[in-house]
Image (cartoon, rainbow, N blue to C red):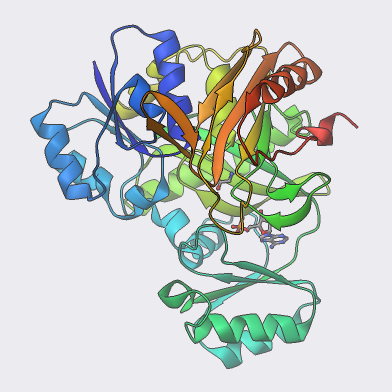
Length: 416
Ligand code: AMP
Ligand code: GLY
């Protein structure tokens, strides 16, 4: 079987690794991939959805799995479908749930799904009036995709007005900021929920928690994510039942009514306030690094992807291990501020129940080099969160490259 995976991060590497560990005879292709994916498959130097579709058709790809949101927003799924090639991910119209925050908020309102009180607008005066009706902190969001940077939590009215002005003028985020979403601030704890959907049915993967800040104790600047763990005991069964009934089921029904049936991963960023879940945002793909801790917990990932593509989840049994996984991101020296010098990666012993998922690496003369950004994720699994964490950190200590930095407290939320 030939599987093409789209993206270049540790997320995409971890999907391939999970499939490889549970199935023989898969030939992997990646576009564009990274230095490590080149060691388990073939990297295709392609980014244009049309070029990728033509390649997939010509080389008889059996299944394409889309890792990164940019391909989805560009409509790669629509192109594959037109060509009758199986693809796991939402169409361009369904991917609007992530690509446009104003669309997402209007959708939530229309289908009566709990979310922070908000206003979508292109008009500064209207934004100002709404801002002045709230109590700081006030949340100001750019409508479009901004690589996770388009959200400002303003501590004062002045800061909120300034952020709004800069977005609407195009100064902060260009076209992506021409519509703003102003929101009330919700004070609670955050959880990432992953529902894998076939359009009508879904299965819930273990709840995960990301660590967005660079430094221990959630200090320092925001990053793409410095580590994750799953399942989180913060997600009680009662809470998960509420999420299924009051959020996921109405979302899938709503998307059907909008003629945008949702196939793929619905990644829901929740804020839990007084034990009630509110949708902060939807993403339409796996989180990174959440994916890296979820993949090792699924016994039959290929069945999962195929069941979604074939709209057959209701008749498919997906086995989730009764285990925990912790993933610690090792980033390069200057992350997230600027590029870092290339550094050779030296890996010592890989302890039992641990493995590496690779991201920012290049392959030269059969050697892996850290090439910047988030370099790799050390993942540990175990029967308890403590054991999984210990295994992840043992591996971290055996991985060396110049400038390596990592958080020492991944999963602290549940280990206090
Ligand atoms: P988003 O990309 O919309 O998830 O926002 C990024 C981050 O901003 C979230 O993970 C939250 O930490 C924070 N955030 C977004 N919206 C709100 C809100 N209404 N109240 C509190 N925090 C928020
Ligand atoms: N880990 C957050 C994200 O992938 O958006």
